Length: 120
Image 1 (cartoon, helix red, strand yellow):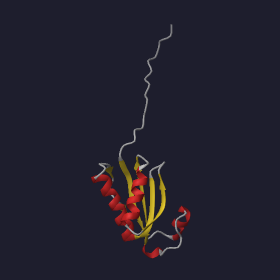
Image 2: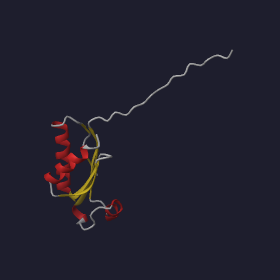
Image 3: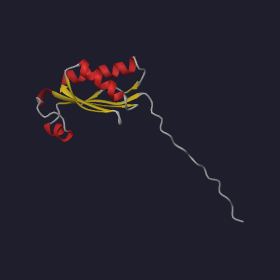
Image 4: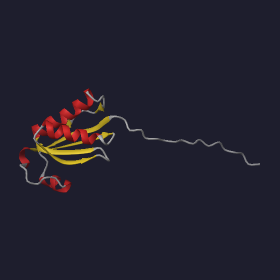
């Protein structure tokens, strides 16, 4: 009789937390970046910025979009309630202000775990 081998079965589940996993500001991106992302091409690239965020649950992008457009003079480039991705563009100061406002609200009011805002 053959020896029976005991097998270990592992079940992995992903549970969406309340978190912002990416909050990054790209200062002065080259025009090709805008073009490849399908963003507003009629802007002054010398003082422009792109802000990109990712969050869970993904529907949070709707709230973040609302905060972004109300907290600064920005262009809402992309908001996806299925992936939790938000992309905004505008003047560097306006994009920075909007991203920081979103992160603060999610951290302080909605009790999300947030990452630091990064810039390059």
